Each structure stands twice: as structure tokens, then as C-alpha cells.
Length: 168
Image (cartoon, rainbow, N blue to C red; front, side, top):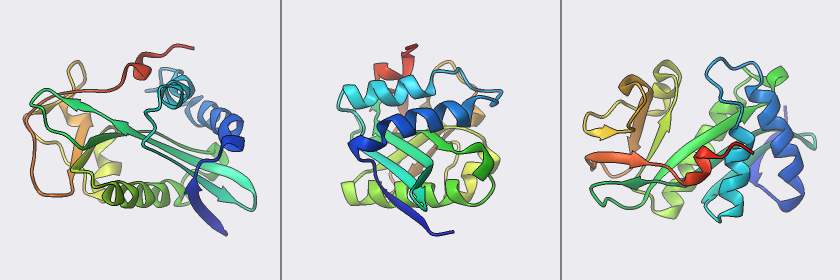
């Protein structure tokens, strides 16, 4: 595997959309709107990082990162997601490579931290933890996790960009 992780290019947009649809098609937790979220973030200029995994010219993975708001006023926090890997390539380490590149990219941006909604058994390997006091209203607390680059932890409700409510 000659996997390359790089920033998305305009020509990648149709492939990112198709990949995202395929990656979430059978996911039990999916709303079926993940591709609309990515497109909405892009249109709103809120994709702080949009990285693709490419293998032999084929797009096999994508991760989106966007700013989040925290009610305490803490700044420089980002939300990770959606993250997509081609169904035939899941379990081959592509998601892990994307996660590493995403966290490195956020460090370069000077981020204070990152939040995500996902399986704690998977994301804990990257240092994400459930942090009491940092809340995404309306979701089970054990699935909302955070990673701090500085060791400082804000307290408050987290809100994502309105693109996360996109339905088309």
C-alpha cells in the first residue's frame, strides 16, 4: 500500500462525496447526511482541515475538521468528523493514518483541542477521553470525547456548525 495523506483538492470533491456515502451506507449510527455535512462545511468556509487518503490514485479515505463553539468562550477547539474509509479498505489502518494526520494538522494550526462523537473503544487509542464538564447536549456522554493539546480543559456545552444539521 502506497498510501498518501494530503489536503483535499477541488478535483477530489465528487470522490469525497461518493466515498462518504459508501462509508456510512451500512453504519447503524449514521444519519445518512454525512456527505451533506462535509459539503455544507466546505460551502460555509468552515473546513479547517480536509484531508484525503489516496492509494495509487484512488481516494480511499477522508477526514473533515471544523471549528466548534464552547459556551465558556474557550477558543481554538475543533470538531473531527466525519471520517470516512472506503468499505473495502476498512480495517487496513487507513482511518488510523487519517487520525494521526488530522491531529498533526490541528497542532500545526495551533489548536487547543479537538472533540468528536464516536466509539470510545476506537478513539481512546488516539488519546481521546470523555471529559466531564465538556458536553454535547443531546448525545450519550460516553460517546462524546475530547483531546487536549495543551492539557487545559474547557468546561461548557459544545456546538458544531449549522452544517451538521444539513439534510441535502
